[in-house]
Image (tube, rainbow, N blue to C red; front, side):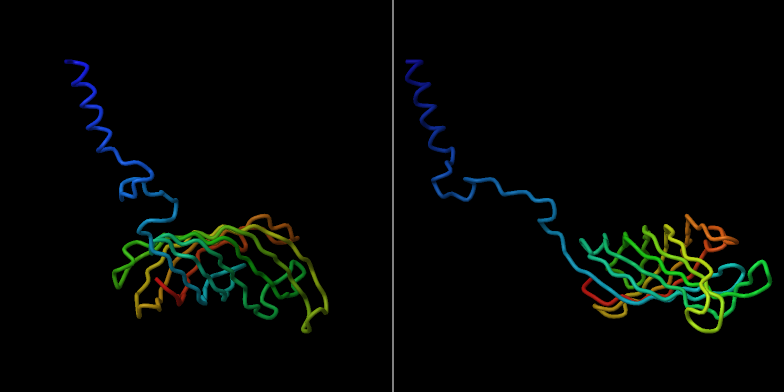
Length: 205
């Protein structure tokens, strides 16, 4: 009697368990992926203009940044900045003046807080490197006074506005650290400073 009951229960369970070949919706678990599911993907790019100070002088840097956006919040991309030279702006120890050439860029990482709101904030950091040169004379190539490579770290806090569904404008404050400077008469603290940036983003958010 007991054996008959056990055989009957096993048969009933076998009828309710789906198999890989029965074609039922629950026959196979859904595949899980790292970047699948309900995540939204987008991206942006655009120009930027930065005011700062170097060697006691006001300077302007222009550049751009772009990133791939994951779920509208996490950005991974790149950013570049270049110094607009001010002719004969920086004095040498001899009293002569020279032009400074500077460019840097690298990996750009960003997090956007409440991107659906018209006014929101972001935090980001640039990690990379660049080059530094200086020249004396009125004409390009007249006299090169030195060239050097450097590394760059620039954390940024920004506030931006959703102007249109594909266009955002913002302003931010950053601290630019340029290390590895090895030119006579120059050090990292001469080029590292706080900065204010105006930027524009065009893309799919």
